[in-house]
Image (cartoon, rainbow, N blue to C red; front, side, top):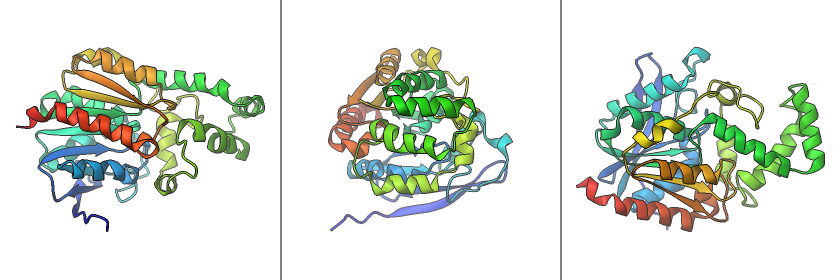
Amino acid sequence: MSKQRLYIEEYVTLTNGYKLWTKRSENGSVPVLLIHGGPGGSSSMLQPIEEKLQDLGYQTIVYNQLGSIHSDNPDEPGLWTIEDFTSHLEQVCDALGLTKFYIFGYSWGVVLALEYVLRHPKRLYGLILSNFTASAESFEKHMQILRPKLSIDSRRTLDQLEKINDFTNPAWVKIITEEFMPKHFCILKPMPAAFDEFMKELNWKICHHFFGKNDFVVKGAAKGWNRWADLPNINVPTLVLSGASDQCSPADAKRMGSLMPKGSAHIIPRSSHVPFYENPTDYFEALNQFLKSTKQLED
């Protein structure tokens, strides 16, 4: 029989008048705020992490970002900036009364998590950064390293479509979904049902706004984002996680962990961009050990 889990759902009204959906578990004493990926994704993919943290005795809190399912979706690109999305995160934390807690950022959520900790380091017991790097340029660089590993025919097709900026062509989509993603996004066959749910819920307009339509080049609002130089200033206990064949560089994850005074990194074998589905045993053991190491800070 599955364990019954009780949640409180409510909306946080931002200073701009729009509302964000939030969900927090009723049980658990120490809060962990989870920030989903995308951009334009949702927290649904993070359910295994929510449940594991609850089993460890933590209270989990998720929210869906502006434009994501359950939250307001204004068609106002002027509101889609890293600065605005960080401000929304701050407002969620304030509205829910989070004064001392952990932050877990996944993929795009790592961007917002880093922005938050640089503004409010004293609020956090610890920081978990899962499956993204410290700059848009580093992400793009690794994607360009992975691209030549595709078949010759696939690379030729991508080159031709790239020249005419045709990134919605069925041939492009097929190569990404059938050849690239099974190696560097999710190696499971079949992919978990949560992946299908995530893709159905994803707001592509926001995703493309931040990163552009070319999977291998960052041309959107996230271009130029870079926090490598700021990592040595993050004095919060931090765990950086990456899949061994992640679309984000495992070498970058190790470098991030080494640059932060209280940082460490763990690379999950037999996994790519969703290691908490692909190799949950190794992933959650690393997460559990990190939380044990910071337990004294919670007292």
